[in-house]
Amino acid sequence: MKDVHEEVKNYYGKELTVSEDLKTNACCTMEEPAEYIKAALANIHDEVMAKYYGCGLAIPSKLEGLRILDLGSGSGRDCFILSQLVGQNGEVIGVDMTDEQLEVANRHIDYHTKQFGYNRSNVRFIKGNIESLETLNLAPQSFDLIISNCVINLAKDKAKVLADTYRLLKPGGEMYFSDVYSDRRISQKLQDDPMLWGECLSGALYWNDFLRMARTAGFTDPRSVKNNPITIENKEVEEKCGDIKFFSVTYRLWKIDGLEDECEDYGQAVAYKGTIKNNISSFDLDDHHNFPKNKIMTVCGNTYKMLYDTRLAEHFEFYGSWNTHYGIFEGCGGAMPFSTENGETAGCC
Ligand SMILES: C[S@@+](CC[C@H](N)C(=O)[O-])C[C@H]1O[C@@H](n2cnc3c(N)ncnc32)[C@H](O)[C@@H]1O
Image (cartoon, rainbow, N blue to C red; front, side, top):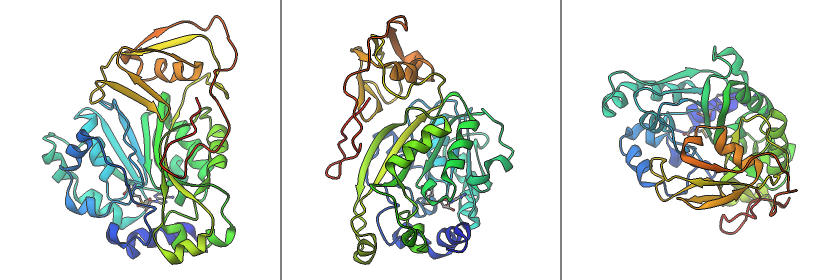
């Protein structure tokens, strides 16, 4: 491809006009959202919904009052969901480089401000390249949360996006994002195919390269939240891709000092108080940590920190200290963390 950014702008600005124009099901969320997300979606303008091209649900819990950045915000669907969940005093900023997408998002700001009963908008959209975030006048360490939905795969310099994301997050903040990954590295020939790249397939990272890249950027313990196999559903594209398997995965990457590269056991435990809105009976930190209300559960040092050093802290009771190390936390392994069958994971703390 001559210029990836021009090809991507052309794909999302001109080639596609609505979600149904996609040639595969890679940029398409399949999961059923929770009831409170469905209620938020019901308030969103049809035109914004029609131009949604996400591949997962990049909306974590406990968002009241947060300052959030959406990388590759498209027509703005996720920003307008977040706008409702952060409340009038939160702030949501979407960045996208495609004029046609930004035009739709901007044109519907007033509609959504009224729809949500706000006296001023808490959402704005900026034109920009997520590979040059330093040019956008965004202060370092100023965001509680950075989300992205099916975009990083389209970037050329993914390592730079992750490094800049780390820089923009406050300590204790997180990147929570859905994207496409592959079970092996993708050949240059496939990467040079603009349609495969635009469909969010040939720019996908091999999952283990992604984990390495995330750790290098400072996100020492990437946690997968949800994964689904992508079935493509297009004979011609399937033939081009051969044996490569693709997954849509939602990761949460915490910016927390002192996370370790392995899960270590300090004899610590936590109990969830049941106080996070819309998570009354239990809380899912990731795909292998479900905390039922009031149940005391042993955790590794990293999980303890993800709860203690973040916005989640007030919702947990904490037990134990860092005084004694009991060795590696049991249950960790290095296999591919995604199942090709039913979305279940091998599970690793
Ligand atoms: C698959 S769509 C997803 C859009 C949106 N997140 C959604 O869920 O509907 C990809 C979007 O990312 C934007 N994009 C891709 N690469 C980008 C980059 N390097 N900088 C800024 N935006 C980018 C495209 O313009 C497009 O709007």
